[in-house]
Image (tube, rainbow, N blue to C red; front, side, top):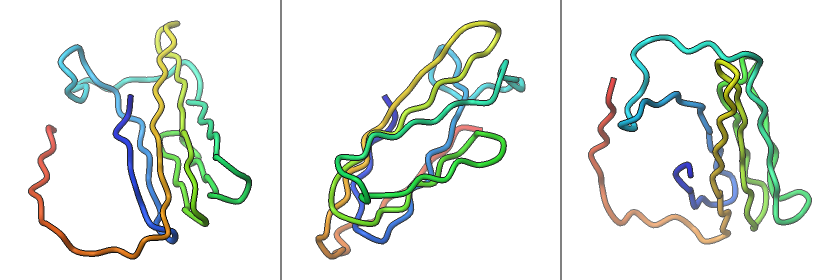
Length: 108
């Protein structure tokens, strides 16, 4: 399951499709899907958010419009094999409060 996110109304969440190897690291060799990835969303109520999928199908930008939640899913077929994932986005009305800093790492 993808990394869940909790955001305030007004945030935009970019969900990016990433191809991973058996160790959970990004693929070093290019991956070509058999067809464009298909994104789905299941908001808890109408009007909670909007989704905008990029032309290449690699990203889905979720705009948080109201309190609620959305389960964003993706299905992609590579070499005849179907891969799926989903993640939960929770949208709150609570104001943001700075509580920490964090070092981000990314395997390239």
